[in-house]
Image (cartoon, rainbow, N blue to C red; front, side):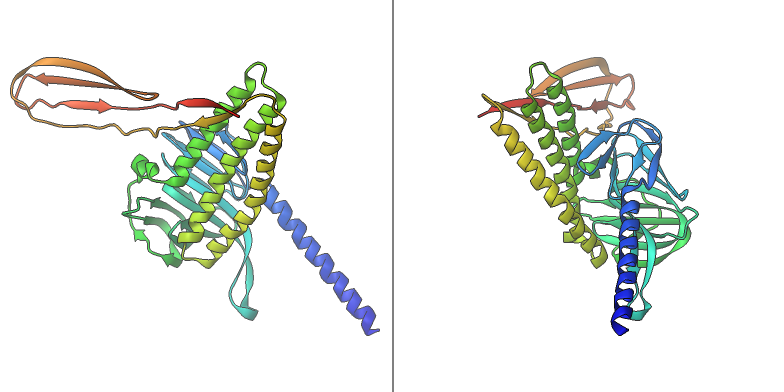
Length: 358
């Protein structure tokens, strides 16, 4: 009798476990948010895929990254919560049912984690009771409230996490944060963010791969090699982001989740490395490896100088360095001692090279 009772209990536990597993699997695979607005250039990094944000309604899944350049992106979650990315911002979006508390007081609570690797985020909570955790590589803040700003400057000399809450309160804090209004760290900070720059380079590889695969007389093995290398670049970015959290974040939960992400990413890297190796063996003659170099956009430089009366002159020079051409124009106008010189220098270049190898 006891044996039958034990078997019945075991079966019930097994059914419960399978139900939880299936629910978690469904939650992880379903879209948790959508792009509800964007301007300028923004990227969506999902697993091994990197794509431009090109339309309203693009879906966002658990673990996806969104990155802006000279524009903004707005995300609306299924519960009505909203997230806006300022220019030159990178974020990772997570949702899960997490265990909190100790021993018999443990509870399971739906949690949303928004990680800012660089830049500035504006957030507004939705209608659900989902717990909100705002994260940076060096801090985690639990928030009970509806609206605020969160940001991070990855400059090694600073490593600053910012928080400005309009409505609500801070519940928990791990690491150091700066409270109150703050400016977007902007392009200068993005240039110093490893994962921001890596994603730019990986997307340049995606673009170069599409162009190479569309060229005439490209073998299927060469296309397979190109695609595998593009996916490897995307996976390397995701792994680097997780590694940064493992190395720098003070919260054990964040570090454990990052370690779990790497446990998923590593087999994907191994599989794509095997695909690339197999494709190489099937190519007769030299293989073609795509390499890309992305030069970060430079901010406008403004210099102000007071000059005596001088005739107006305009000088244009061109400086060429490798694949990059930098035009510089200097205009001097001096009708009075209060004349100002404005010197504007801008560089935008994404050279792509295709290197044959044997």
